[in-house]
Length: 219
Image (cartoon, helix red, strand yellow):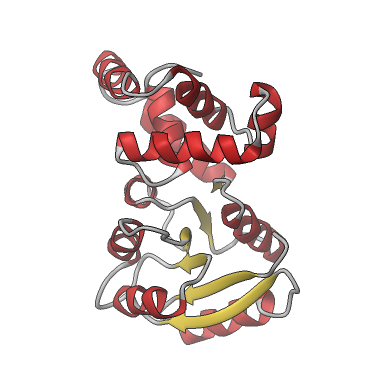
C-alpha cells in the first residue's frame, strides 16, 4: 500500500498492547491509530477511527473478539480483522473465520510474521499460521463430504463463470495481482468480481470463500 496501514489494536492486556504498539507502531508501513481493551470498545473505535486493519484478541471481557468481529464485518467498508490470540482450538479458529476474520495467528508468532500478516490482510489477502491451516484441513475431513459438497456447489451456482474462476483462484491462495495475470483481467476487475461473489454468497472474507470452494471441490 502506498500509505501506511491504519491499525487498531484490541487486547484486554495492557502489556500486550504496549508490546504490539512498540513493535508495529515504529514501522513506516503501519500507523497505529488507536487501542481498545474489549470487543465493545473495538466496535466503537472502528466507527470513530476507521482503521484499515483491526488486530483482534479473542478472549476479552464485555464482548469477545469473535462477537466483535461479527459486528464489525457486517457493515459496509468494514476494516479487515486479523486475529492474534493464545487460543489455538478448532472451535475458536472456525468461529473466527466464520465471523469474517481475514487471518488467524497465535501470539507466539514472530514479530516479522505479525507485521507481514497485517500488511497482507490490508492488501486483501488472507493469512493463516501453519498450525491453523492444519486444523482447517482436519476440520474439513469431518462431517458428511457429500452434504458439504452439494450445499457448497448450490451456493456457488449463483455466481457467474468469471466469478467462480476468481473464487477458485482465491482458494488456490493466489493474490489479486496473480489472479489478474492468470485470468488476463485488470486488478480492479478482479476486485469487482470478488466483491460481487462475497455479496451474492453473503460472506465477508476471502477465507470464507476458500472454505466454500474446498467444500465444493473446486480445488
